Image (tube, rainbow over the protein chains, first blue to last red):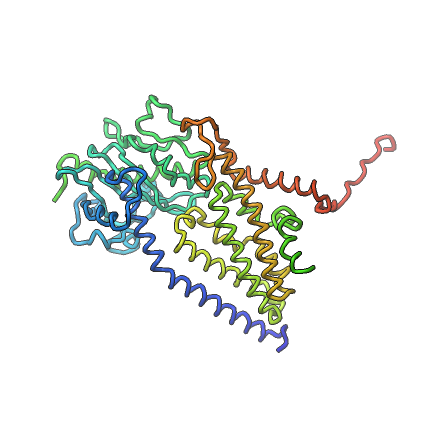
Amino acid sequence: MNNDSPVKAFLVILLTALVCSSLVSASVVILRPIQLNNQMLDRSRNIMKLTGLVEKGRTPSNDEMLELYRGMDVRILDIDQAVFNDELDPLSFDPRRAVNDPELGVDIPADQDQASLGRRSRYMPIYMVLRDGELNRLILPVHGTGMWSTIYGYIALESDLNTIAAATFYEQNETPGLGDQIMRPEWQAKWVGRHIYDEAGDLRFAVNHGKVEPGSSTWLYEVDALTGATVTADAVTAMMHYWFGPNGYRDFLDELREQGIPQ
Amino acid sequence: MNSKDTFIRPLLQENPITLNVLGICSALAITNSLTSSLIMSVSLTAVLVMTNVAISLIRKHLPSSVRLIVQITIIASAVAVIDQVLTAYLPDAAKTLSVYVALIVTNCIVLGRAEACAMKNGVGTSILDALGNGLGYSLILIIVAVIRELLGNGSLMGHRILELVHEGGWYEPNAMLLLPPSAFFIIGFLVWGIRGWKPEQKEKAEFKPAPLPDPERR
């Protein structure tokens, strides 16, 4: 057939589209289980680092990780009511899918939406590390809109529910080399020991725009800037302000501080 | 051109980055780490080989009216497959490379080789051409990445080479080298160096500036 006839052009396009799309679909379907497995291990690995149960610099085996995971008290928190929900299964509950569910998700009022999320899940899985029946660490998931897409992380609080014991970000699409420095362990290590609220209960935590001088008035609450990544740094600050503010975990933290772990 | 030349020439003589100044976007963006650069190099070479083979195979049946659409469809599919493979088997690397793997689609080297070589030559020549260009791209990426990561962060592939001052060592890292513009300078120096060594690579001036009017005769 003549190469320049419209029929031939149509046929070639159709065939290319068919072959290419089946190749792409096949690769997605075949590799999906491996990717999901990676994601799950990645998530539990991220939480493990924050529990303080694994020695620094050691990577626990996958089995060990599951063991440690079971040793934690994982609950589903109803964020607005500040109570635990016993009907949802903490292991299978997916807050990302819940966002767009009419029952499980909720719109965030624009004036409170520092993290530019628009909508969030009503419920979040939270992780409590208990030692002799007492709360030792509380691990809270946070997320917010960054430069290009959503940043996901966990913040671990000491038993005073104010001092940051550890922080990690495990998923982001910030600019490589600039914003993606939030993934660097050296930077995350700077969060340790920072306070979220001051003595009056005001939310003071922030990522500074420069270097925080030790001993300065903001030293207790601020983390060093990221070189060349102001948007990402501000996004992280905004995200912390949202999740530790009145629309986020604030009520729950107050409750917990006064009444102890609700049953 | 014999087959040995097809493979060797793109390495230095006709390097896609330094002679044609193609593929600059990724060369600027991900060369702050040697690991990312290596993975990017392998991914791009793989995409180049796959697309060059596919396009060379069907080149005689490509109507010129839809030629580019078909080429881009094939390139985009190859990139999507590579992206999936990376997220499955190298999840950490895929995380750091993020959008830049998907952006291989817009890397002019891929479409450039499809048009310049695969459309006119058989499969064998196309594979050699793809490998040569892929390695030429990789070569520049690796040189830039070694300079940037070593001087900007004191490490290579994440291993500490130079002890940093804030960790108690002696080396004060040059943070500018971690920012994309530094890659621009380094590539600029490379282009200058190569063209100084091989003056035939210099482009001819496209125009001569008009002579200034003589102030005496005005």
